[in-house]
Length: 320
Ligand SMILES: Nc1nc2c(ncn2[C@@H]2O[C@H](COP(=O)(O)OP(=O)(O)OP(=O)(O)O)[C@@H](O)[C@H]2O)c(=O)[nH]1
Ligand SMILES: *[C@@H]1O[C@H](CO)[C@@H](O)[C@H](O)[C@H]1NC(C)=O
Ligand SMILES: *[C@@H]1O[C@H](CO)[C@@H](O)[C@H](O)[C@H]1NC(C)=O
Image 1 (spheres, rainbow, N blue to C red):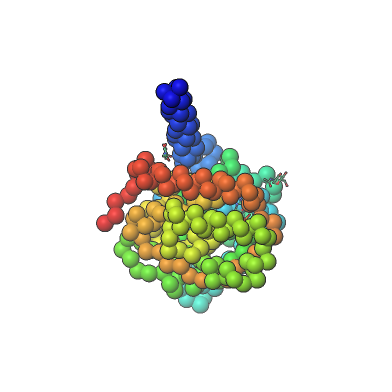
Image 2: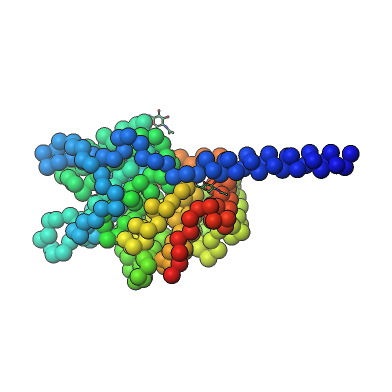
């Protein structure tokens, strides 16, 4: 009797291990680019919408900053965010007062939206004559925020690159604070916006109880599995030096909400310096996170990231 029980137990364990293994094996490979994803749209000087070829790992010495904006069904919110960003970028990135050349680019990564996101962005670009400075790339199939940011970062050309949410929850001009705090480091550096200083303020307390409960759960799990010394890993406002973003993003696997954690883990592996900088944040209506479903996904992803690097299944870059 005992022997059968043992056998049964072994079988069950084996099955569970197999299922888990095949899940891990199949569900977290970085997606290969699909046909039609290697181009971007922009509005030319005459206001025509033009298609051009995207180049990976390209550089342009004239571009100081690339801004990557993931957008999924954002036609309502993204224009406000772009306006705020363009206004700030146009005053900030000038060599001289009369300099009219734009030394920045915005890359909007449309993650297979089914609304008017692309049209709205191109219309805006045409009205502001942004030309090559605003590129719109479209993923053919939805990849999730991590996939979209990764795609944008692989095609950024600036000395620095930041990703920022399309909902404008962070104040774009806070990028100045991030730049101030960015450390010089030959292996690259990152300044991440942080809302950790707001935990006991209205903005957080007013959020629903479920949301806060999940947030605390998430943080406990993070402490166990991931990153211990960063107060807010999930803020959608992170600035990278070129050394940092060009090393980190080609190695990314995670496509979902939790990709920030993999970014930070990879940064550590690469010897990149991370500084956390308090920024202004206001909750914007219309979030597309489905609380319970996304929390469960995040928990699973977090476990996968940890296991994967611990068992050396994902290649760990060498730290010098
Ligand atoms: N690419 C991609 N981006 C997404 C997806 N869902 C949301 N986003 C983008 O991720 C950013 C943040 O999305 P929100 O829906 O505002 O998420 P949120 O719950 O408000 O997140 P917080 O602002 O941190 O509270 C926006 O730029 C969205 O367009 C998705 O499925 N794919
Ligand atoms: C980790 O991810 C890789 C590649 O995405 C996959 O092949 C592997 O099975 C995963 N394994 C674990 C334990 O997470
Ligand atoms: C995106 O927008 C379209 C058109 O408004 C809508 O039909 C679709 O359900 C939306 N999808 C999501 C995931 O919000």
